[in-house]
Amino acid sequence: MDIRELTAPCGLGCFACAFYRKNITEELTKGTAKNFGVEAKEIPCDGCRSERGCSFEMPLTCGKGCITKKCVEDRGLHNCSECDEFPCENLMPVADMGERVPHNTKMYNLSRIKLNGIESWGEEAAEIQKKYFKGKFVYGTFPSISEDEK
Image 1 (cartoon, rainbow, N blue to C red):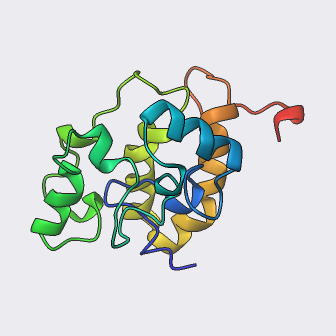
Image 2: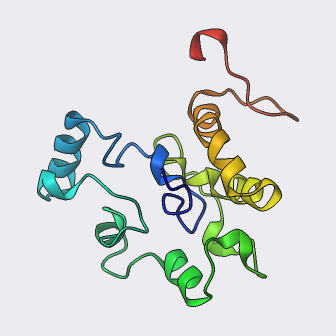
């Protein structure tokens, strides 16, 4: 796996995404195609840096494309953590859909990339995502995961 190629400019790990071609299930493909009114073959994603880009980039951005991706490309950077203006409003967390998609992990991911490098972050990315979705909020510390969630 090419960790640089499969890390989105915003810090999301394409390799850990449920819609990534190697991870997607037939059930998710069919359900998403039905909900978005597109053909099932258009749903599996090869990552946002692939030639096609993210499968949801155009439908969800009304054809404008990903502003964060464009910004990073225009600045000649690999990801937002390399930018002098990091963090910016494009990365601001939002509660909307936070229980279903890991978009709120972007800032944490980018901070870990900046601190330890992309390869080290790649080794911990799956655990970060697991803590995001299965962890319980604990005031003043990191998310707690019960033994049956591990």
